[in-house]
Image (cartoon, rainbow, N blue to C red; front, side, top):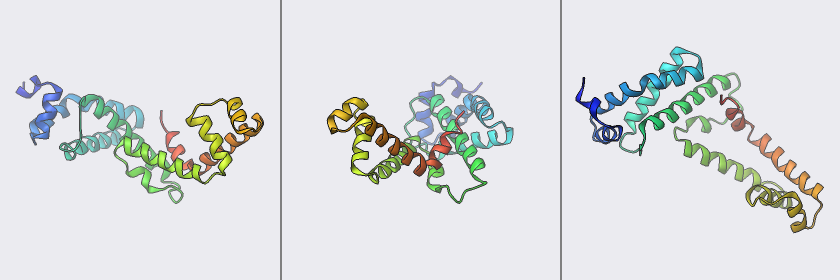
Length: 186
């Protein structure tokens, strides 16, 4: 039994940040089986699951000094989940990658991917006609009902519905590649 097995996760993370490879090894031994099981469940392939877990631990070591990790088990589980999703996306999109922006698959950080998607949505919404954009903003961002929007803008409820439908259709069409990636989530 290693002395490192007595350390808490947070102690191991602090030691790993100080380039202690034995602390990293202990984290690996604590969590590799759970991560492998998670990846195998999502991917259905032992080889792909092993590759994903290897990618996650490799990334953990490479970013050990730059990443804030409060709960290693949760951090590693989320990293594994998204690495598996990226792997599935690469497989699914390999048939027709000409249409898919490569920018999506490069994100290792969930927050960066969400910011990119939000920015893409904002860009598409800015291309909508002013009234359509305003109706969509009142509906989705301000939480107003169709009736309230109709009263505020002095248009019919039917017109409000049409504007919202138009905005959603535009987003679906323009962001279909990104939404397609979300469809592979189990």
